[in-house]
Image (spheres, one colour):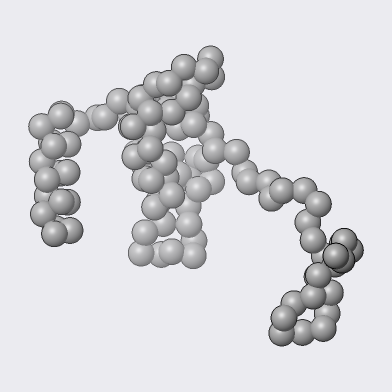
Length: 107
């Protein structure tokens, strides 16, 4: 079995280096987002403040932040290790109506 640090691509003869370390992602600032959300900042202002505006997607540049907010509403781990939920800014009635409308649109 070949244990070298190189492997070759199928379509060419050039060797490709294998990564020794796993890929490092930029840490997501959950606590900054929670504080800004509590202060009443808009999604656009929060995205600009944390540098998460997707310039490659002009139709929906705030997609990643909205997705994060959706996950934070379900629950995230706080600084002291407890599981907390980001509070919604609208009533439960509005949330329920929006969920029903989304389910009807998908069906």
